[in-house]
Amino acid sequence: MRLSNDYSVNAVLDTDIKKFLELREAKNPDAEGYILPIPKNLAQLEAIASSQLYCEKRGFGQ
Image (cartoon, rainbow, N blue to C red):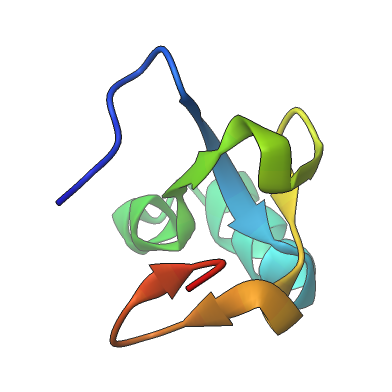
């Protein structure tokens, strides 16, 4: 279940920022795959989230 927009922000994992920026600069549509909905209380900045809190199976903070 995804959180609603009231409680989440689109962000990129801190470990993926360099790759995301490279893809975005190249206008590669694969960059979109690096954007994840993150609960606002777990986002480090408005668009960066700690990969240490992320589980590929369960999402964030679980």
